[in-house]
Image (cartoon, rainbow, N blue to C red; front, side):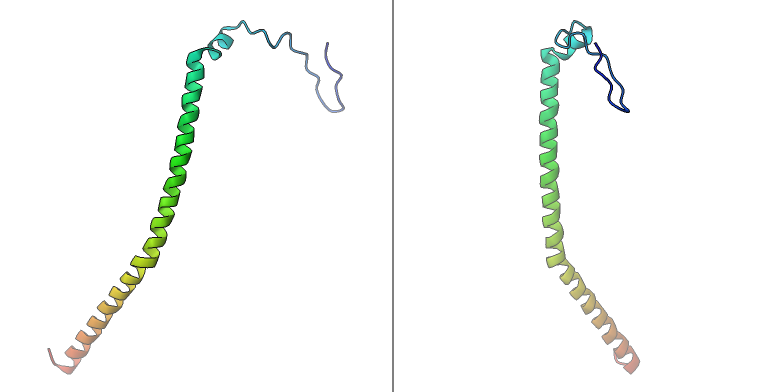
Length: 97
C-alpha cells in the first residue's frame, strides 16, 4: 500500500521485498571479486590522497626555501652585474680601458 502523499510531494509505491535479491546484477555485486575490487579501489584512493598531500607539503617546503635562499642570491648577482656594466661604461667615457 502506498504511503499518503505529503503536500506538494509524490508518493511512491512500497518495495516488494528489499532483502530478497535474485537478479543477476545483485548476485554479481555481492560476489567476492567485486568486494575485493571495491577494497582495492578504496586503498588506491587512500594512497593517492596521502601522496598528493605529501607532494603538496614538499612543494611548499621547496618553494619557501627557494624564496628565502635563492631569490636574494639572484638579486645580488644582478646588482653585481649592473655595477660591473656601470664601471665599464664609466671607463669607456673616461677613455681608460
